[in-house]
Length: 95
Image 1 (cartoon, one colour):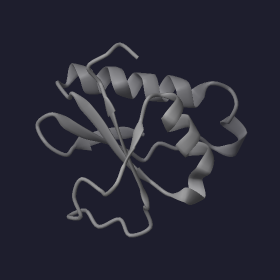
Image 2: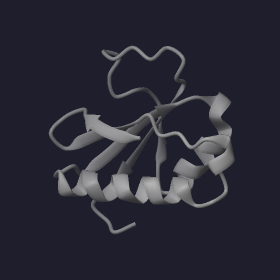
Image 3: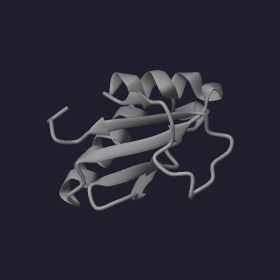
């Protein structure tokens, strides 16, 4: 998992995945917190992501870490037709 720029102040969380055998061991938490840290260091103020209703567990995890739902994607340029949930989180706090 990592992040890529969307704009000067917004990065997109991408390819975050934990294998089935590694789930429930805190790896998701460590990965997400590390990505938050690195994105802040890179100067980003918000972190955006796209996911799917099929990944309900991931959506709950993202909500736990402060992501909130958007009504539409930030941009259709990337073209992720399978994604139907768009979320964003401020990186300006220490959460």
